[in-house]
Amino acid sequence: MATLDLLEPGDRITIDFHSVVVEVLEIGDERAVVRVQKGGRVGHNKACNVHRNIELPPSRSRTARPSRLGDKWERIITHFPLPTAGDVREMRALIGADARLISKIESLNGVAHAERSPALRRDFDRSRRPVRQVPLPEIPACQKDIMRRVKTIGRPVYVATNLLESMVHSPVPTLAEVNDIYNTLNDGAEGLVLAAETAWASFRSNASKWWSA
Image 1 (cartoon, helix red, strand yellow):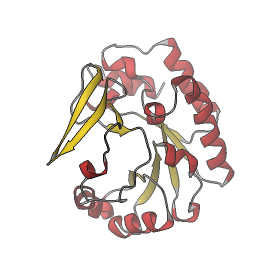
Image 2 (tube, one colour; image 1 turned 120 degrees about the vertical axis):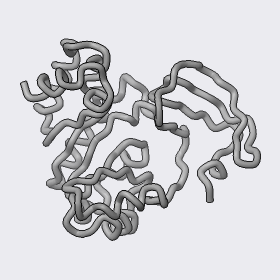
Image 3 (tube, one colour; image 1 turned 45 degrees about the horizontal axis):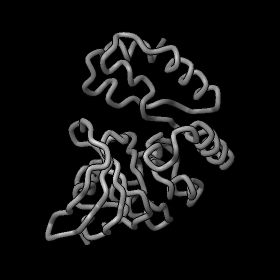
Image 4 (cartoon, helix red, strand yellow; image 1 turned 180 degrees about the vertical axis):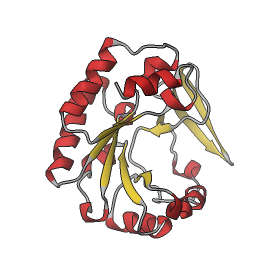
């Protein structure tokens, strides 16, 4: 089943961290008609989030191809829409036994089932992308709760998303970002993950230097 077939009229979809919000009006052949509720700028290859639970397979052909390179990668981070032991086994079979499988939590389903099948996962990556489903004021408490629960079962936790976001366009981070990083590590994060800050930002080297400061 194509992802488009899972949509229903009335679905609310946020794109690129709430940059754009749309409502599905109707589903046609290979397309959906939507009404833009909030317009904005969308970056390249950005994620979409449907504001209800939908079932998706743990891997698709696009995911499976690079996953087979697991014997060449030390760590592989993957998001399981609704984590089950079967999902993790399927991904493990794709990447091989030696690569380190990190389960990425970036949906309400992931938040609710963070501790599921811990014996099959070595690490957890706590992405703050649930901001697309969790109200922004609740994100700090949500992050602390996930970290506490996962650390309780003895698994390391990494935190990602927007850690040095201002450095995409600025040579120095904000005081709030520095404070955020300090508190996240103090809460027990094993490590932190940068994305745009070192992928395509204007001050990639600066971000790396601040990271090691």
